[in-house]
Length: 249
Image (cartoon, rainbow, N blue to C red):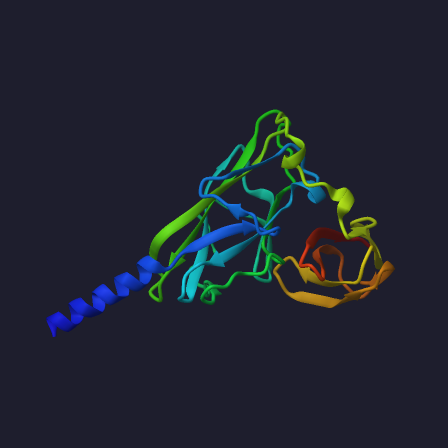
């Protein structure tokens, strides 16, 4: 019995040691462990980091994320989205999805879609000191115990940073544009191509979805309550645009 238990343990350890997690941008550019993403603006179109989580192993994995540290901020006005959930704030040592919820499941040799996985700081703070969020992505087993090698990245807002051309997303080539994010009855979207959209509540529920045609589109949200919503646009190449929508009376 002891030999069997030892053999089982060795097999399990071998399985876990082979499981790998990796991150990539929505353009499929690998993200290195320890990489820092720096933005000198809080403009949502420029400072939103879209990414996906990749399983590079031949076995299914389960993933959670942990906010390791926050510098010069409280976690408010930091949009953190995953799966179908979009949080308006985070806190130090918080785990997402929470330990009381199911982790993110990724099939063997597969990846999450970049849609729904993004982060954005809208807090300008003092306008002098940088704001940063350190986030760890890690594997858990069926007992919710961490194993394997995690990936840690830093999202940084630095108002004094001087960024090169390649460090900033160029919004001029976006496939669609939301005319204004403060609306009453209709969201006006001008699209350069056919695309699709989802409108989510801040707790992640999909309230509306459909297709956009090339040209001007008007989406009726008159029946929704006043508040904040998240709109995600996606084109046929998988490019993503995420925008916070504020509905007024």
